Image 1 (tube, rainbow, N blue to C red):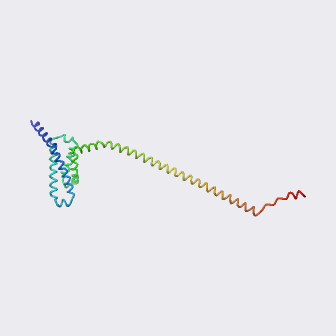
Image 2 (image 1 turned 90 degrees about the vertical axis):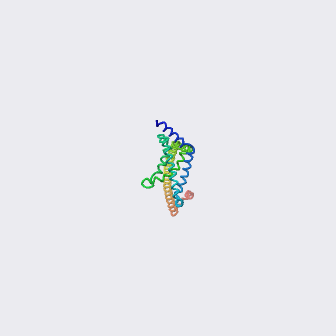
Image 3 (image 1 turned 120 degrees about the vertical axis):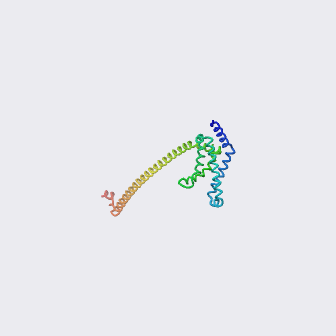
Amino acid sequence: MNTFPDGKRRQRVRAWVEQPRVQNGIIGLILVNAALLGLETSSSAMAAAGGLIVLLDRAILAVFVGEIALRLYAHRAAFWRDPWSVFDFAVVAIALLPATGPLAVLRALRVLRVLRLLTMVPSMRRVVGALLAAIPGLGSIAMVLLIAYIIVNAMQSYTEAEQRDTKRAVEAAREHIEADLHAEMRSLRDEIRVLKSLLSGNASNPPALAPDRTASERR
């Protein structure tokens, strides 16, 4: 007997939560909350109106908690099958963590409440969905770029090795040619020295004149 009325009540709650006025109101509160979170980082703003800023932040957080509770009541188990709903729940739950203790550092994640715009605006959800769907393709592109980088790096290393081998071969050939030239120059200098010594020896001992054949023949 209680199932049908409860089901009707859930349908009414779901219809009320999902109507455009409520959704637009939540979006407006998200934007206001983003501005309040920015003001909390300003020491002058907190000194001037810190109490009001904190009060408004808590009031908006209470509205967020109430909205999540109504969605949990309306959707029941289906709420946890929707990734966007789970994201909303996690963002609001982080804001409820105590400001002191080991979990206090997680309160810095309150800024994630601004990301609730992604769950509230359908066009943003489509953009995020498209980006997430493109991740496998981006991974493939990254693999192709990695392979290309490895190939280019290997070719560059191989080219550098070839250049080093060529340089060593050229240096060895140059050293061999220089050694041969030095040997030839030494040999040429030795030959010139011998030739000079021979020429100087012939100059000091002139050769004898050949006899006058005409005179001998006459005798």
